Length: 212
Ligand SMILES: [Zn+2]
Image (cartoon, rainbow, N blue to C red):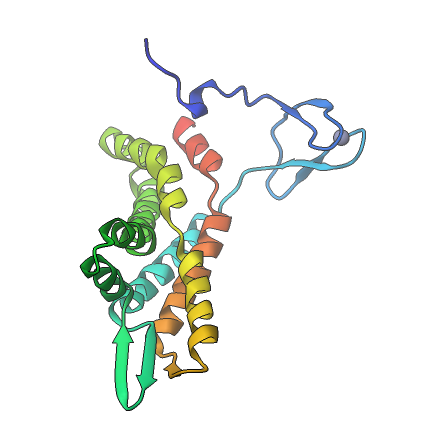
């Protein structure tokens, strides 16, 4: 027996109002129009829409920031004359050397590998939809990328590292001098651009491109 994926088995024609539970039959909406509940006027759904060119620009920007964000130090500590810098990967290696290799793998996965794969996946999806959607081989690749998109975006947790950078700055600033350099700036920009990219991206809409 073949298990249906969430995408295949969800009945997309009917939805419930979030605040009054009224059953509403969905209809196709023109883009940038929002459907309201006829009883309580709560917004129910928007027409799923993503601007391919906008996403392409965000995606390329994120990839440009991804490289220095991972190669340049995100924190630079000056303590009693000694200077210490660390990149995300060096931090993970330091943790692994102390025996916490599970933590190191988690750090590398959620801050380096998953965001990198996510950006490459979105870039390939956009390029396939823009230029190669008619070729069966590329449609197949697109289908696979869409299938794993949810997993990749769940594994991407750049915000946790932004928070930890802030926490270390606040905690260590009494003891040492902390300098935030180009690496910190690139990491913060990578975080922001990826955030906007994920906001612009609608998985539902990408699947519908494939169905057309
Ligand atoms: Zn309602």
